[in-house]
Length: 450
Image (cartoon, rainbow, N blue to C red; front, side, top):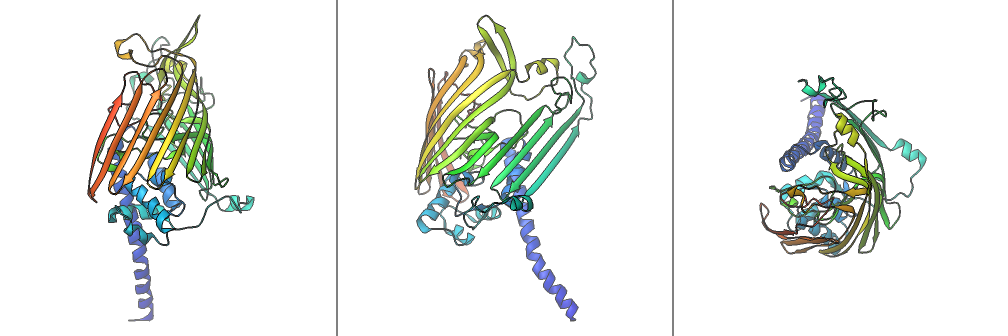
């Protein structure tokens, strides 16, 4: 064998494990996306999930600094696995190697293989040492443009009579997504979207797209202020009885979705035009305490009328579509003010929290005269308070939340999840919603949103 042949053999042997590792990671991601797609259904913006997975793979979580919320964002991890990872770190000290994951109770080989691309062992991350030069040279930027068009022409595009309902825009759907990231410490996002049939640089959309969204996220700003977001954000707290924005799993085969694993405060990156907050929020930590205060000023679409008693809100639209004259007249007609906080305390495998949420509209929400609307909310403001908990004991995981909308009803969910085998989990889930319990942002495990 010649020297040249030896070089080629060494190169192939060195390169093949890398190819195999990349192939394994891609296969694991494809399997995960396929399973999540089955759980979420067709209406969920799958690009949001893909973006989060790709970001977390490019910016792995430091296992020695990871919070419960960060690990819970990896939806394939069961609640007890998240708890056991943090408990192992607290009892044994910082991780020295990813191989230690094999010693954690409840961590099977498949889960470790899925987890490995998204985590690493590193040092403490903060804004110390950030300069204008590093921001300019070490940032990561991505941009995505999307154009789609339905080939079959819908009837609404051919109607020209102004007295009839019709589409005011063209058949094209446009979307723009821009991301700027500096080592996961500073993140900036911008979204713009126009649905098919909506005007573009015309009528109420003289600014171009129908929907704009942006945020600035800063992590590690201070030893106690771990995160602050200005712009659009979501909150996922407790079991979702009071406040759960963004991605939501219903009933399915994933044991990790039985118990809501609230990720807390997150930047809003989806193209969906509802169920998010627009304002400012932060996560503050002190020892075993975590507080998440927030305030938001949202604009909603819906049917409103004016009377001698003031502004009346007859319906609130959540479709995000503004194609017809009627839908255009509904656009951004309602102002919504949201403020509140979540305070939680963690001790080993126990976590308890208290949530308060105040919502106010710029008019009175009407429930309608139909029988099906008998127990719907009617009024201008709503105050909610709630208590949530989670506790892990051996292979059992207990969770629950109780919430009350002041002046009306009560709701509660409780459950226990047991891991009998790495491939077998069982759970018992109890839920009780009083007919007059009201919540505008609830998404919990139930037959329909609260």
